Image (cartoon, rainbow, N blue to C red; front, top):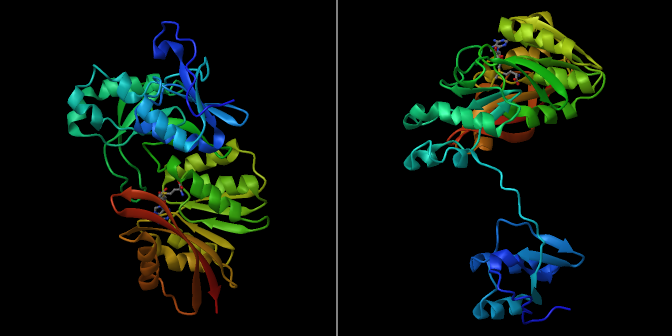
Length: 369
Ligand SMILES: C[S@@+](CC[C@H](N)C(=O)[O-])C[C@H]1O[C@@H](n2cnc3c(N)ncnc32)[C@H](O)[C@@H]1O
């Protein structure tokens, strides 16, 4: 039975922390109670909230002072309990905490909070110059945090050139660039020094793959090592023509095709998508154009490979300002082929690539008149 006034149990000379106090409250008032405790700085973040039937046990650092008790009573019934529950939360080390003492205090806030993990590689985005003298310590701390990682690489240049490959420098662990990553059940061999691949597009690739039906023919115009193509052919009885101009990407694509069990078929093609479109004209129900920097330059080629009845084009562009409106305008100005009607079925911001610059996906329904 809960009282509006707290029952203070077992005042056995232990401090509040040793007594592991908690506030028993009704589940319905839990959120407001927690807010009031946090505002009064007595909610104990180091322990978990536990539940017992209709009640919650909110961990607190000290008994609520009289002034707070009145406020809590306005919210609902509560009871202060000595309890072993909730158990202490295991404290996970953070990169910044691991580097405490190794990196000067004034630079700690510059240490990146996030990084990509690709197979057994940890990939760091470029860091501030003032952190470079400490980059080995940062790398070693990242290896401690990511037990299955063997290598830490630092991105030193932008994604660049026709092959869209970023440059990396070795930081810690085993000096290598090739790894095997798994994405939605697809295993992919990737060499980050030779090909483009971003683990951040996994969700988008899954979205597109889920739209493909059995029996479809798909052209993946800028296929890289095949993450779109292989996911589609793994799930569906679909035929996917996978084109890339980078010989290293196509070599890895071939490895990846044989590494995965496919229901459909992936046909790897080394070449310029514009030229290849002439040899596979009119075959596709669906085209994937993941080359956001210049996809619109290849729009004619995409229309060429679509069936005479038309189909779907997944177009990716970079767009600033209002990304959705910007992408629609780009399409309007750059891709107005005669004899073709083009309806935007869906626009989606895939990711921010720079401040106020976005990668946007447009799903286009194309009808050829
Ligand atoms: C942004 S990457 C996308 C790779 C892959 N779709 C993915 O999701 O990881 C673009 C790819 O297009 C390839 N590429 C660039 N220009 C090309 C062209 N004209 N024809 C065919 N592939 C091209 C690059 O080599 C690169 O692998």
